[in-house]
Image (cartoon, rainbow, N blue to C red; front, top):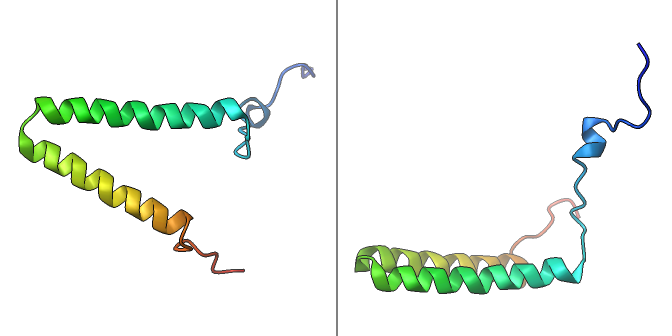
Length: 80
């Protein structure tokens, strides 16, 4: 049984580059953040206040956590 050299292995087929610095990817992330904020804002106006309060509080806490981890040195490499 011969192996076709044109067929990629599963590792090659699903290889993902996590170091992508494409400007389109960055602008897409910003657009996603703005769009999700607008969607959550619309839901906040349409659903009961307890759920809106939960979403608002969760978003504020997660934003503060990300700022602390990424900008203020909260995520330090223990090996280096």
